[in-house]
Length: 366
Ligand code: F0G
Image (cartoon, rainbow, N blue to C red):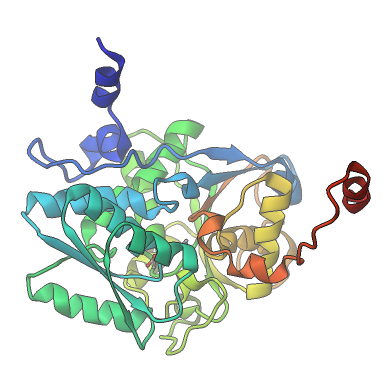
């Protein structure tokens, strides 16, 4: 067989891998960019920080086609939209959903409208939506306002909503839990996640439960969610009118999957906690410099959360007494290049030196 043919016939993406668990039929047209199958990386430095023989793994969702976990749900949502004959999809977004929706709509040959809070989207994500050819509308309002508008526009029947209020999105995102179990041989003991609109923690919990029910795992993890301190409605148990955080992906005051996230946390005997912007930035830098994994600030909230569980007396869930040799997974949700602003601010200005070996050796200074 010609190799190009072999390649084109190879099964790829989360639908091909987990079709039996997904709302896909033989007649659903598959829109995929080979998402999923992301690295689960053992992290020696993080493991040492926890101590007592515990092992920490990072599920690097930045390795998805548009650089975030959203692609897992978008392949299902856009495939189902196409099956229903949709001509256009729509979403509200803090950036990553819009990048992913734009890419999958481009692939499907349908229109994509993205409604964004003006001035609050990380540059890399905005560039992606533009590059993939989405119709971008910026509003004078926050994500919660954008989602309210999208819900109303969705009712008109002109657009299919591809936010995580669309069950196809949650169905796709639960494949990250399947992959984790498949790779580890069982569910981990703890799973740490950043929480914004709360779709992802809902999806992971659904995935872990479904896999256990199918006897593919013997246990369920304790789910630990982390919100940014200035955007922590679930933690405070009230709507935050003006959410603020450097982790712009999680700048959300009224999460759509609030109740489901609460259920995941209580059913798994887990917890929801907060991390400050300073802790987020420090964790982002630590993960890049000590493990070689560069993630966007919202993703670093899971790592900041891990540190809080290890070190802080104020942690809602302490790791001081967890069983020895526990296995801990932290999901990092998006690639660091999407949101370079926080790092740019801390970068020193590069002053050129003369183009000689001596000057360069001097400048290296080691
Ligand atoms: N991390 C990143 C990088 C995100 O983009 C998001 C959400 C989250 C974490 C939180 O996940 O909402 O499922 O609890 N981003 C959405 C968006 C809101 O529009 O891109 P969640």
